[in-house]
Image (tube, rainbow, N blue to C red; front, top):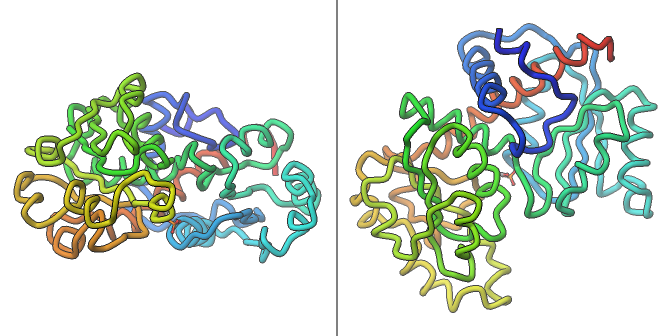
Length: 309
Ligand code: CP
């Protein structure tokens, strides 16, 4: 059974996950999409620890937890004693003392959750940490791509835009390489530096050349605050070089169009590609619920096997 290969308390990143572990999550997500779940988490309490805004990730995690019967605490990091300087680890230990089994956390500091997880019995699921990882986003991306294309092995996936500041791109690169796909990063040197080649990505500066015949085009959100940091000249220049337009999409008629959201329409992606028949953007959001149910389910099996509540 897929579940027996999972031997982890937490889901902190895709780095270090084996191909069978990734497959276990994707396969469990397929089962959850096919049939209604048992309330596996009905005795469990879950808290959200988000220090950054979120629409999709937080809502999908909450939907997944509720479908599995968990109780979610009305805890808000921004109005908690974190704001008075309490440390993250003390906050987590206090939530554990209150009977919380799961924490879904989004933190500004890269790697903050890796430091906390070994110090607690609570299972921590990373919902995005700084520039580091966003594992469940990458897993739902893999799930959606596999669903649309029937496989991941050998697919050519092109990420366009700001890879430098993107935890989504980083987790996807790791996950896609693990699953045998080929990854290209396309963008200006300032946002898609050559150094990414050392992590296994092909680097391409010209967008038309990069996306021609691709299996998937993943538009990365342009973090607009980067303009004042002079990572690119102007939004108009950026769109001209790296925006996914109808004309450009015609170069890749079989490509799945992907974007993790939120979208800057008219910047990295136009309405036609975002809303057209090749777009998987809203399927990704829906699939995010099944993937998070799968992550909870595998971790819950691990907890039960160790007699943890
Ligand atoms: N994809 C993603 O992380 O979206 P949110 O920031 O809305 O959670």
